[in-house]
Image 1 (cartoon, helix red, strand yellow):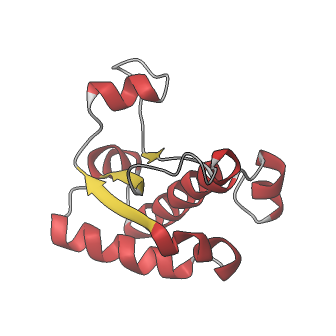
Image 2 (cartoon, rainbow, N blue to C red; image 1 turned 30 degrees about the horizontal axis):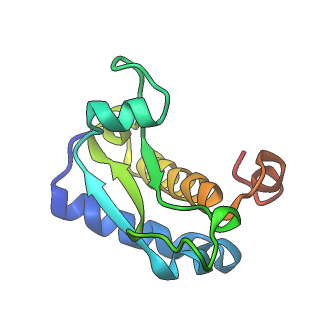
Image 3 (tube, rainbow, N blue to C red; image 1 turned 135 degrees about the vertical axis):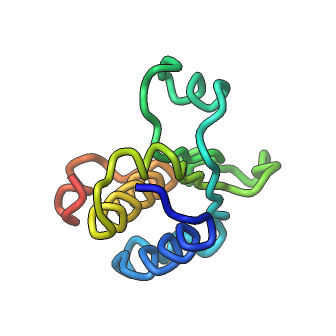
Length: 124
């Protein structure tokens, strides 16, 4: 797939609206940014080599690691990487589903959801 940046942004916004409120409520103070692809530093941060695929990345301080003494210095951000997501999908439905799954998994890093909890919510 290869869609315009404007259309991709619209799809991301609509797809986020489909995420159940129980999960979506954590997005109130998280910035969601679409980038064409991850930088080499982002791949390294995620523990991936340059030839591996990264669809999304959470950057920030997870809720369980926060303290009043050391508040986060930067806003929590979820990055969605347009090109890898497009390459993985062959139609609009797959694209929407992959964006939803990616955002939910990145929220899970912020909140501290286990893989078991994600599975219970239908995001395994």
